[in-house]
Length: 395
Image 1 (tube, rainbow, N blue to C red):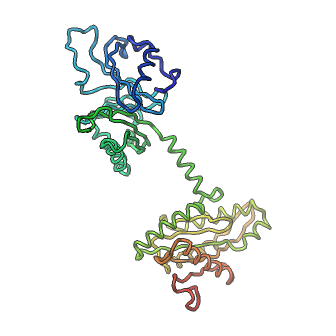
Image 2 (image 1 turned 45 degrees about the horizontal axis):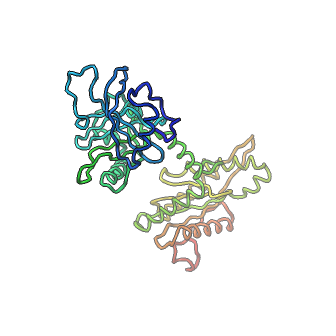
Image 3 (image 1 turned 90 degrees about the horizontal axis):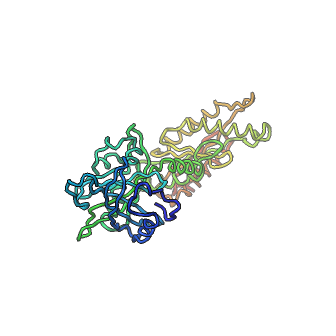
């Protein structure tokens, strides 16, 4: 429930013993550290039958409140012994954060039982009765790649390191696919040794937000014209790859720098629209010639690059030569015009002695300009660091 009473759901049909004004007053008196305050109230169940319940109210901060109702007994069935509310093994949430569409859960740590509301189950494609109400099943539904992080964040709260639990992770949907969710919770009851006895919280479906985040991430790392990764993404990846080579130099790694020959002439003769088509054509042929583990990127203008993990210098040279021949033998076609395209390529090894990826790229650039200066449509390979100046700087 939000801090603004005007946004609260109408509870007048449900609560029989509390007027709206009285409910507002009691909520505002709740401590905002997650500690629950109890009130005994008269209310109606889903079938409209009157009953008595214990109302737990807790302020969660940020203007939000949570309420739970624990049924005591049916008023018309007074001959039954009234159980102690604190001794009930399973408690059900009746209200979640208004308008959020979240699922609510209530975990009895001692018994390892979790009470799920129907919305919690619905996020995962289940009905209430299809879920085994145990925390073990919850863990089984968490994506294996997210399980360690989820468990660590939850344990940090249970051990008292954090005042609440919040984690984003994937859970398996009933139909087999993965759903991004966010769980939030707080231990509202602890024993004398500060061990949690009861933890309550919400589960939110954040799939739409994750999709937007992924699209924004893709836009930030992708060249709009060609669809290849952009310079920013390439530089990030090459730093990671150089760090790997420094740890395991025997595995090798290489970089190709590529530049389309005479591209300015294509723009001058055919126009920029045709020039863009040639760039898209080149990007398609270029990326399709690489392995799945390799990374093709557009660095800007007519300049491209490739990162070749686990590739030694001579193997990189062979790949570059094969790529050069493929580009030459695959002309671009646009609006009836056939345009021959060639490329010059510089090759450099990722070396453990490189201080940064700039050193590697500098050698690859130097090899590229050597290829262009010696007639274009050729491959040049830079010497490893420390061997420059021993005669030619290129192999």
